Image 1 (tube, rainbow over the protein chains, first blue to last red):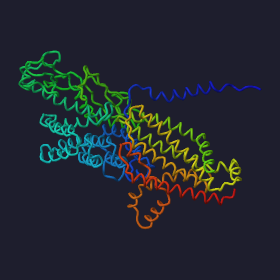
Image 2: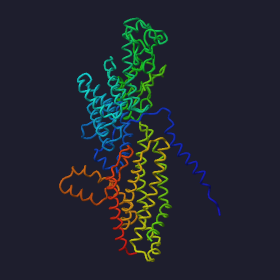
Image 3: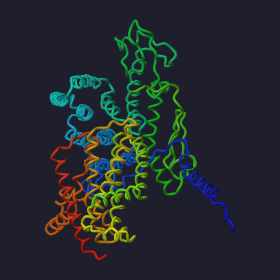
Image 4: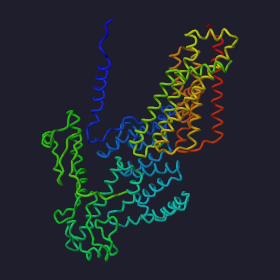
Length: 378
Length: 251
C-alpha cells in the first residue's frame, strides 16, 4: 500500500507560520497607548440583568477596557459620549460599574481621579466618593480622597474650616484603630501645603497618587501633574532667589547659603528646588527640575524644561487632534511636519530638543532623556 | 438500586470527554486570569479571583448542561436503558439514581475547580478567606439546579434543543434576580406578564455570593438556609417533573 506524504512536518511549518504571524503584532518595542471611545454604556439595571450572574467579573472587565477611554480623554478632555443622557462618559461608566460591584475600591479611586482630577468635574467626583463611603464606611482611602476633595477642590479649608473639622471628626469616628485616627490628624497637618504658593492642590494629587498602581496610565498622569506643580513652584522660588541675588543656575556650582537662609531660615523644605538642611549643614545643592532636567534661564527667567514639554503638548493639542482626524480621513498619518503643513495643519516646533514623531495617527513628541533621575514621588 | 445507578452514572460522567475537557479549559483559563489581573492597574488579586469564581460558575453550568441533557437520551440511543429497565427497577428510581450520580460528578468537578483556581491564587500570593468556600458551595447549588433543569428539559425535548433551552434558563434565571429593579419601568399587563414569566424560572440570584465573598463579606445563616431550601425545592420539582414524563414515555 502506498503511503501518503507525511503531514506532521507540514503541520509544524503551518503552526510556526501562524504563531509568527500572531506574535509579530507584539514585536514593536515602543508600547502604544490604546485609545478609544466608550462604545457601549448600558444603564446599571440593564447591565445587571445582562450580566448572567457575573456582575462583579463583568464590571471589572468593562473597567479594564475603559482604560482606553481614559487615554482618549487625556488628549480630548471633552468626556462626550453618544446617547440622550446629559451626563459625561465617565459619570455614566462608573455609575454602571459601581452598581455592578459596589465593593470594589479601585472603581471609586479611579472614578474620582478621572472625573475630578482630569476633567475637573468635582461634584461628580465627590458624589462617587459619597457612594463609596455608603458602601464601605470604614475605608480609609475613600475618607482621605473625600477629605482632599472637600478641602482643596471645594476649598472647604478656607471657606468653612468648621465644616471641615466636623467632617474630619466623622472620619476619625469611622476609623477603628488609634493609628488610623492619628493618621487623620496627620492628614490635617498635611493641609499646610495649602499655604505654600503654587502647591495648594499638592495634597489632593498626593492622595490620588496613593490610589494608583506605579506604571499605570493613571499613575503616569498623576505623577506628571505633581511634577508640573513642583516645577512651577520650583521655578517661582528660583526666580525669587534670582532677583534677591545672583544665582548661578548650574547644578555643579555651589549656592550661596546666606541667600538661601533669607528664604528658608531652617533649611529648604522637601518640595524646594534646592537641597539644603539649613545654616551649618552641608553646602546647598541645586536639584534638577522634578522631571530630571537641568533648570534653564530663558529671557532672565528660570524655567523647567520638563514643565515646558508638558505645556507644549497642551498648546499644540488643537493641531495634534486636527491632524489625527485628518490622518483617520486619509487612512495614514503624515510622513513629517512638512506634509502635515501641506495638509493645512502646520505644527509648531517643539523646542527643548524635541522632535515630532508620526508613528500613530496622533502625532507625539520625542523628548530627549533627562540628564538625572526625576524626583521620587512615592 | 438507586446507588448502583448513581455510581454508574458518576463514573460515566467523570470519565466523559465533556467533563474532562471543560475542567482542562477551566485550568487554562484560571492560569490566564492572572494576566488580566496584571493589566488591571491594581495588584490584580481581586480581579483574578473574581474571574476565577465566575469561570467556575460558567464552566460548572456548561458541564451540567452538556452532561445533564444527554443523561437519559444516551441510554435510550445506546439501548443500554432496556437492560436496566428489564430488571425490577421502577423508573423513578432510575431517574433519581441518574440525577444523584450526575450531582456527585458535578460537585466533584466544582471541588476540583475550587482547588485548582483558589490554589493557583494562593500560590501566586492572593489572600484568601473562608467565605470563598461558602461561595463555592453556593455555586455548587446553582450548578445542581441547572443540572435538574437540564434533566427535566431533556425529557421533554431532544438533547440539542434542551441544551439551548437550558442555557436560556440560566440567562433568564439570573436576569429575574434583577427584575424587581426593572419591573418599575413596566405597567399594567406588561408588569403582570413579566412577574408571571419570572415565576416559572428558578431565581439563580440566590446562589451568587461570589461578589461578596471575594471582598470577605459575610453571608448570614438565614441567607444560607434560604438558598439551600430554594435549591432543594427547585431540584425536587424539576426531578419530579422528569420522573412524571419518563414514566409515561414510550420506550
